[in-house]
Length: 383
Ligand SMILES: CC(C)(COP(=O)(O)OP(=O)(O)OC[C@H]1O[C@@H](n2cnc3c(N)ncnc32)[C@H](O)[C@@H]1OP(=O)(O)O)[C@@H](O)C(=O)NCCC(=O)NCCS
Image (cartoon, rainbow, N blue to C red; front, side, top):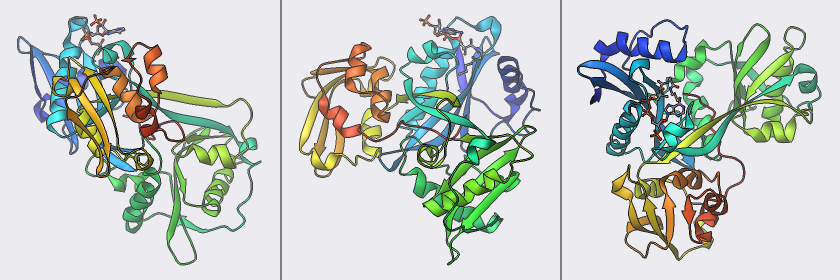
C-alpha cells in the first residue's frame, strides 16, 4: 500500500469516498486542498482505497496554545475495509504531525476502537444545549445594557483577539488561527452582533444562524456580566417566532451561573479523543499554572507506545524553576500506556481512573497535581 499527500487532482476521488461514508448531501467543495489542511490518500495497486485529513489547529491547555493536528474525514472504501488501511493512514498521520510540530492530535471518533488501537483516547467534550424560550426568558436582565450592532469587516481582528482572551482561560478550546480559520466567515452568519462599552471597546459578541424552528447560536462570549446579559437579551428577543435556542457551549459558566435551565436539559454531547503525538514537545508547549507550588519535583515514566517510538521508553518528567520538561532516562517506575497520555494531558482523567482502566501502573500524584484545572476540557469547534 502507498500513502501520499493528496492533491487537487484527487478531488473527485476523495469527495466520492467521503460522500459514500458520511452520506453528505453537500455539493463538492470548490477546492480539495485548502490552506491549513493536509490530506493523505492510500492507494493499493494504483487504486485509491482510503483517505484522511489533518487540520492545522492549536488547542489551549494551561493558558498556552499547543499545536494540534485535528484529524477528520477518515474513510476507507467499503471493499477495502477490515484490512488495516485506516490504521496505516493513522500511522502515516502520526509521523506527519510529528514532522509538522503538532505535538498533540484530536479527532471526533465514530469508531473509538480504531483510534484506541493507535493511542487516541477520550479527553473532552463538545456540547450543545437546547433552551426552551420560556426558560431563557426567566434569566436575569442586564443591569446595564451595552451598545450592540452588527459586526463589520473592521471588527474581525478585535473579535478574534477577544475570543482568544477568553479561550486561553478554558482548557481545550482552539485558538482559531488563520489560515485554517477564515475570520471573514463570521460576516456570512445570520447573526453577528458585537457589544461595546461606553469607550467603544469590544466586550463581547454573539454569532448565530436562524433555522426553521430554532436559533442555532454558535458563540456567545462576554467578558463581564453586563455583556453576557446584554447578549442573552438578544437571544430572548426571538421569543414569539422561535421556541428554542440551541447554544453551543464555549463557556459553560454562562449557562451554569447565569441562566435558569430546568433540572433536566437536552444536551447533545460529542466526545473527542486526544493523542499525545510527541510527549516532550507537548509538555514544552503546554502551560503549567500549577507547577509553581510543586517545584522541584520529578516522576519517572515508562512510556508504552509502539506507534510513536520517538517518545517511548524511560522518560523523566521534571518540574523545575524554568518550567516543566520531559527528558530521556529515569527508572521507568510509572508505566503509562499511549492511551493514558491524552486524558492525562487534557485533565479529563485522574491517574486513579487511568490505573483502574489498565492504562497506568504505579503511583504518580505529581501528574494529577500538575494538570488539575476546574471544568471539563471542551472544544467549541467540530471537524
Ligand atoms: C471506520 C473505517 C475508517 C475503518 O477502516 P478500516 O480500514 O476497515 O480499519 P482497519 O482495518 O485499519 O481497522 C483497525 C481496527 O479498528 C477496528 N474497526 C474498524 N472499523 C470498525 C468498526 N466499524 N467498528 C468497530 N471496530 C472497527 C478493526 O476491528 C481493527 O481492530 P483490530 O486491529 O483489533 O483488528 C471504515 O470502516 C470506514 O470508512 N467507515 C465509514 C466512515 C467512518 O466511520 N469513518 C470514521 C470517521 S471518525
